[in-house]
Length: 410
Image 1 (cartoon, rainbow, N blue to C red):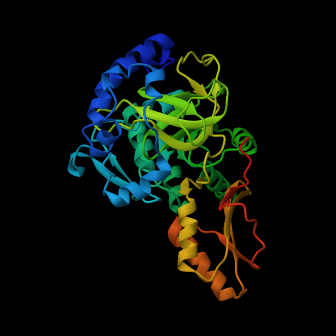
Image 2 (image 1 turned 90 degrees about the vertical axis):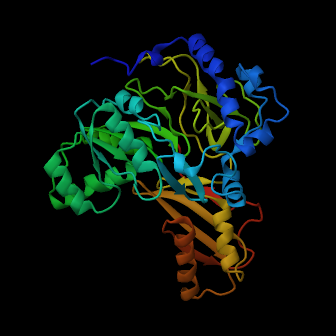
Image 3 (image 1 turned 30 degrees about the horizontal axis):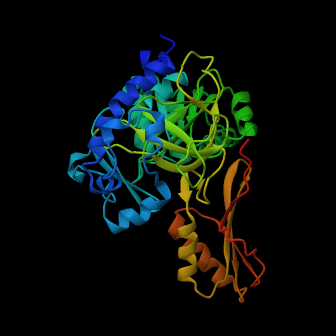
């Protein structure tokens, strides 16, 4: 078995940038076939965009803008040139944001991330990311199969049935959120089920604090983090060096000042902006709302692409809870459905290694039925359960903050 997935991972930075930026004008021309990109690029000489400095002059497309853009011009806001029927699968994620999947192998670029995590051809992988409507399950399913692994398409939940699959197929690998891996392991310990075949894991979609990393290590599971989105797939991944996350190939990643498109100095914390070199469905300077910073130098594992520190919080108030994005506009929708409420604030915390949501709502009434009704609306609009606390009018700060993420990121 080779140390690296392919030779692209060990190119010099000069070689990589030369190859990527030689391809970029063609990618921009492909993007400009879509009306929304054509409008954005109408004053730009696309053939001249052959460097990071030139790319930084293009307008940023904020992911937080996509729900409104998709609603105004369905299904993809005018940013996709090809008809829906030309894609392999069509997804949605909270917002709603609509994502098409081009019909080709490992389209989400996940195989090299699994390889860097120690997954091998012939491994059996328990994939617990959701296969329902959202692309998460398919991102890691296609990655594992491209690597030559067999996949158990388990999805989340149904732990009893998952134990039957684990004990029968004896998967060596796990892909899913770290929260659900802990749920599985704890339930196995409690019920006497055997999950000991799982020796390595790729996790994403939720906070992964050091306490949980250490717990998995103590239980004999070698666990690696990936960073990705439903739009772009796997953006960066951890290797055995355990020294930051390595940016995936065929992507150009920038770190910019939040709220702008201006690149920050290496090492400064800023918002992640990604351009994908995908002719069928390119993304050009998609600002994700996630914060990170560039690490100096190359990884000790020999992979030479840019490294980032990993997820360091949100540039806006949108946050990720149990692998699902929760947005300020969703909390505003609760207020629209209950106009008798005053200010609302969703607080995200972490208890027993699980993400938790608590919605504080200003209300003259402290009626339990109202609280339960609000909890139902919270679940309806976010697709996640959370508790609701009714507080007296005027008691929440008048600071414009709708979502407060109080989880530790270290």
